[in-house]
Structures are given as C-alpha cells and as structure tokens.
Length: 188
Ligand SMILES: Cc1cc2nc3c(=O)[nH]c(=O)nc-3n(C[C@H](O)[C@H](O)[C@H](O)COP(=O)(O)O)c2cc1C
Image (cartoon, rainbow, N blue to C red; front, side, top):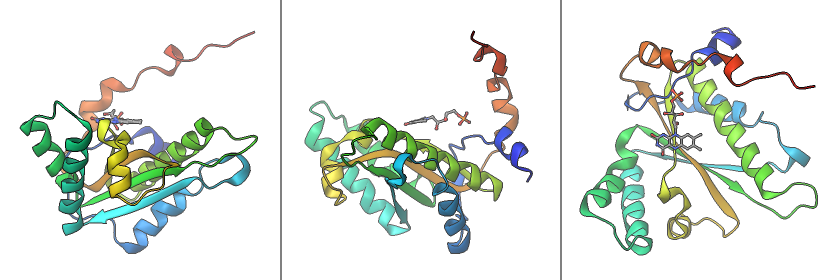
C-alpha cells in the first residue's frame, strides 16, 4: 500500500479474529514502532506480547487488580475485565519506562511511546491486519503494573488489540474524516 493511502485509511477495529501477524510480520511492526521520534534517544518504549492462553491469565490479573483498587467494582465490570484480553488473538501492552532526564520530561517520553504505538498501528494496517488502541482505568492501575512485573517508573500507554478485522470499517468511519482545515489555521 502506498504510504499516504495507508495513513488515510487506518481505522480502529473493535472486532478482531485470527490470524494475528506471524513472527516475521510482528518483527516488522515493532521495527516500525522503533522508528518513532524520541528526544535524546532514550528509547522509552517497551512492549509485552500476550497470546493464546496467556490472554486468559492477563484477564484474571486485570480482574484481581481492579478488585484491589476499585471499591465499587461490579460483577459486570469484573467479567468484562476478565474477558477483555480475549477480544483479539494478540494483545500488545505498550508502556513507557520513564527515566529522569535533564532535558526530556515524562510527558515527552510518553509521547514518544504513543508515537511508537501509532507507527505500530499504521504498519499493522499496511500489512492488512486490524488493530485497536485501548486503555481505560485498568491501564493506570498500579496493582496491575505490579502483577505484570513492571517497575514503579513504568507507565502503560496502550493495550493494542491486533488481529484480522471482522468488519470493513471504511464506510462506517468515512464520516469521521473531518476536513483538516477545521483543525488547522495559519498563524502570524
Ligand atoms: C490513548 C488512547 C486511549 C484509547 N482508549 C480507548 C478505550 O479504552 N476504548 C475505546 O473504545 N477506544 C479507545 N481509544 C480510541 C480508539 O483507539 C480509536 O482511536 C477510536 O475509536 C476512533 O477510531 P479510529 O481510530 O478508527 O479513528 C483510545 C485512543 C487513544 C489514543
């Protein structure tokens, strides 16, 4: 796919199924992620890939973490969290390993990691896969960070769901394609 056409037609896919990208394709998606801009070349981005039966175990950790930190957790929300990672054949947990730096504040390290996630999404689309960036309160749940073995300086930026799109989203999303001029003005 031509580069601009790929950018113009990336949509999120809430419904995903098998197959997920194979090992070589996944490597290319991460190569694309690593090409994100990155102040002082800190390489703050980290990724966990979760597949197969591990997805169910992650769901259990999400539920346990929510039980720890959400006093008002309902059964419906507990079940939703438990099943969340099963929404796609591959889940990528993207997080930033934030470090103290005299010129690069935390926000820039989070932005660089977000840019890496976007590169990953666009590259997945270029290879014919679908993906969706999700977060929710569980992304910021410190108990989940601990259960995943993350460090206190780590910040989850995205749960990226990846697989083969069930639906063609193009027609549905066409109305979202706001005219750029609504967001852009010349200054000065
Ligand atoms: C930081 C971030 C977090 C997001 N979290 C969620 C989420 O938890 N649930 C959700 O439905 N969409 C979430 N989205 C939005 C979707 O990824 C998607 O962008 C949105 O549905 C618009 O669809 P489009 O990507 O096809 O334009 C998030 C997007 C970003 C950038």
